[in-house]
Amino acid sequence: MSTNFEITQHVRFPDGEVAFVGEQFFVWSELVRALEAQQEQFRAFVEMYNDENPTDLNPYCVTGTGTDIPAAATQQDLSTEQVAHSNYSLATDNITVTAAGTYLISYSILVLEDGTTGGTQGRCIAYVTDDATPIPQSYSGVFVAELSGGTGLSASFIVTVGAGSVLALYTDQDGTGVPDMSLEKSSLSIMKLG
Image 1 (cartoon, rainbow, N blue to C red):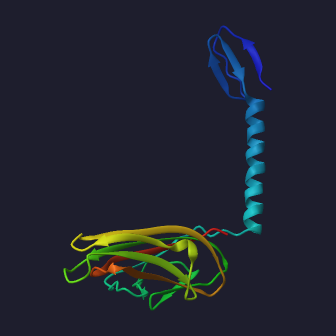
Image 2 (image 1 turned 90 degrees about the horizontal axis):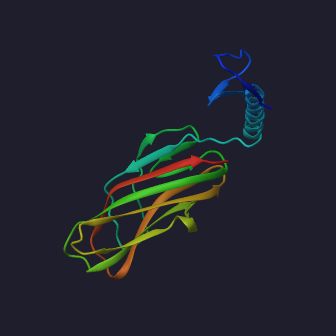
């Protein structure tokens, strides 16, 4: 509760913040104390929630290069850890997740259309698998024309996986005639949400 004072000279109130509004000063000490108490209650709630629902917002990121993208399901290169984390391990383009939970996964692929001997147009598809099963919400796709120079694909999605799940990045092509495509760069990032 604030108290309103009519003052004609400069006054400091030692127990609160003083604000000047025209010719009146307002003491906000009680309001400040109430806000500090609410902040402390919120901080305690966050700490309690985190203890009961551990969240690991530290990211993990792997990249790769140089794999063909034929008209068949093909695992893509993810061979270099850019941001390491103890919750994940990388071996032969496969990412093993050590802790069960809900994860935010994002990937991007830079595709080269690198020849003139393929078909005139095709669709390039990308997706992530969990223990060799495609994750439905992970699909992305784009049409690519011969001599177009290339394209890119990306997706972000949330998925719940079990401890020991193995994640991999795949591509495929379809269309009446598929252009010559290859992977120039790939990236996959993971963050545990809960």
